[in-house]
Image 1 (cartoon, rainbow, N blue to C red):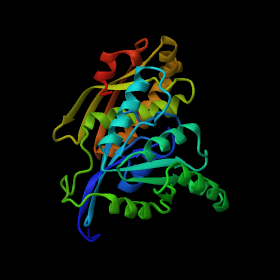
Image 2 (cartoon, rainbow, N blue to C red; image 1 turned 90 degrees about the vertical axis):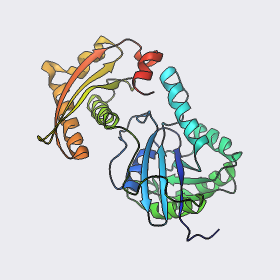
Image 3 (cartoon, rainbow, N blue to C red; image 1 turned 90 degrees about the horizontal axis):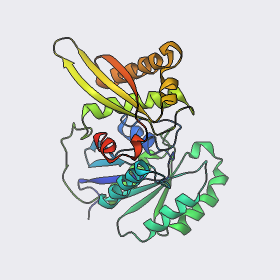
Length: 297
């Protein structure tokens, strides 16, 4: 098959939590599509990002980090990642060079070793390691998942990302574009609104509120002729004590979360945003089928 022919297909980004899947997606697309925080399990849903080039169309699927699930939310997240991997034309397994190869990585690598679909290994965060320190990692990855191409990269700086794309392209099937050239994702605007609010919630509460928080967009109204979108959203937490933490003294923390989220939303949508946030305590929402389904999980 000639490498000059157009190729297209789905590329699943998989790996343990916090290895840099969302950072890589944003780097490839040249814009922020997936939220990024230092907290594990930030990504919960399948996020499609489309990169169209003259010779290829990459349909990148960002997935939740594979982890030991402790509740229904965790189980749903793992299922999303596993299904995305099973449906993909190419799998990019991302490993964190700074953290090293852990048991979770070895489990993922062992499962991929028996896969009959193309797998490319991206050793990420090489900007945080000295070059000689990468050699034992590369050697171990080759032993865990033999005969797979390994590309050391830095999603943060962009180092070797184009080389990774070149390797992935060669593994994609020959195909015309699957989406219009100007398409960027298949997700609705409400999804990105909820994600950007949740990002600022997680960044603004640090370790005080666990990752079992969520944002539900209750109303998304575009005001025609006013260059304005009015968004009403509910922040869901598991306990009343967490509600007080999110609101903060005299509402200061909630106002700051709203201010930062509004800035992100205005950059993303390119219009003015009026954001109305409410905080609701819903005990163990993350273990309820109905609540998770309502949030698209």
